Length: 201
Image 1 (cartoon, rainbow, N blue to C red):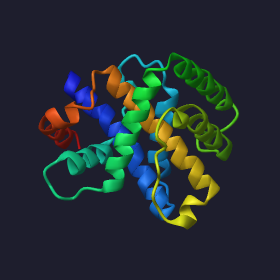
Image 2 (tube, rainbow, N blue to C red):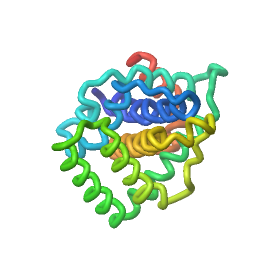
Image 3 (cartoon, one colour):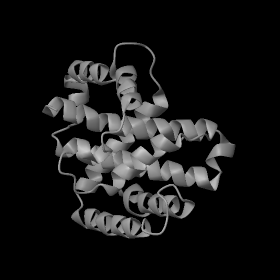
Image 4 (cartoon, rainbow, N blue to C red):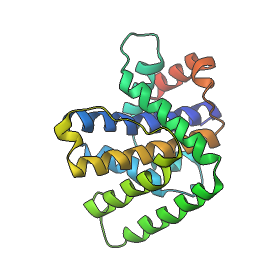
């Protein structure tokens, strides 16, 4: 992968996670395979290569979101745009606070230990990942307001999944920044990003 492909992959990881947030908030349904891909990426904290964060998983839906949201077509979802902007803003705050980064590393180590006893999608692991987001990430900046159906948003398990997925989105945003991603590139390099995503779908 060249640098642009790697950055686009990381951006697809963000979009893959926030698209699931949107779907759970509106419909309460979960693709467990997609959920596992996003949440597993949170626990891959020392990859040899950037693509190892997603363990070779198919991120085609994330690439599709990039094409839809950044491309010239009119099919754009305002909630997804808001989530993306919010996640990138929270990641910037996180990267500027070494103490928060250290706390995040410690909390994720706890989740990794918990994995010795529970499956990744077990409610206790989901609750732990959700609490990492609520305790460490969310207080750093403007809270991301998730929009959906009240019945789905009030469901405790859905709340866990949504917060865990927002944590996964921030993890991909960390990777994006580490690979040289900057917010202005979404404007200045938009065409190149969209073309790269379209080829990777």
